[in-house]
Amino acid sequence: MTVQAPSHRAPSRDGSTLPHALRPQPPRLSGRRAVIAALVGAAVVGVLVAIQFLAPHLFQASLPNRLQDGLTLSLSVLFESLPFVILGVLLSIVVQVWLPDGLIERILPRRGWARRAVLSLLGMLIPVCECGNVPFARGLMMRGLGPAEALTFLIAAPIVNPIVILTTQAAFGWDGGILIARIVGGYLVANLIGWVYSRHPAPEKMLTERFRLTCDVVVHEAGSPTRRSLAQFLVELRAVMPALIVGSALAGAVQVIVPRDVLLAIGSNPLLSVVAMIALAISVAICSNVDAFFALSFASTFSPGAIVAFLLVGPLVDVKMMALLRTTFTVRTLAGIVGIVILFGFALGIGVNVLV
Image (tube, rainbow, N blue to C red; front, top):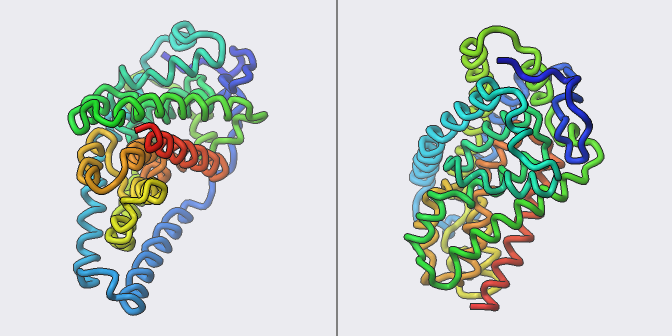
């Protein structure tokens, strides 16, 4: 079963014909990512050493202990995320190789807003954490969905997800409206981002050069479904694994660089507590399936709105997720996504504090 040829689809305002417009681009230098990763690692070590000498009183633990803690945290994030990434890659292969041609188009509504509304609920059927959603969304785009539609799924799925809903309810119950605010907020911000990027005049420019080239290769891939599945499995792992490792390392490093006491000191302020928990959500990079229990430990110190902001922002734009999304979307696109999510999370957190 082969991917539909580029010439068989009509233009769409939402960019749903994106693979048809893809053109092979010259690949970037292969060593560039390795150099960037090495520079990031050196910068993190440099920051730790500078803090140790300039402000040693900020931390109770010594520098070697903090380095060990950072390594432990990085590995825990990596191993927690890896099974979901592999599951997401397998689901991506099912979409790309094994689904009948035209099935997705027949199932989804024709109107852009209705397609995005349905896609934002797809996470209810695919309970994969945010890490696994990235390769799955890549597979959807390779089969014809536009970037705006894929983003709607990507933003909603880590929250509008049966496992996430159950764990959030187990942690907080129905008190303070935290569960309802998280679900409704995740659904709304996903459709907001989908609508914003559906207005993009050139959807293919939202994607990285490397992903556009990968799409072109997949569209023209020959061979049996089994052979194509194995080849695509290797392609997707090569794309997402370096980003996952770098993102996990950044998540561990940030947690040992930023003094936790600084965040806790402002937890009682209804405004600053929301800002602090958003900053914490971006840095700790905890899987959305279990982040509610982590947030529960702050419930006695931080306001309900701050907890909601943490539960909304973390699964969508933490450092690990941004590293994974960078395999597919341009820096400019990611900057817009981060801005919308943070502003929406802040407004939602303040709103919950006012109403509760």
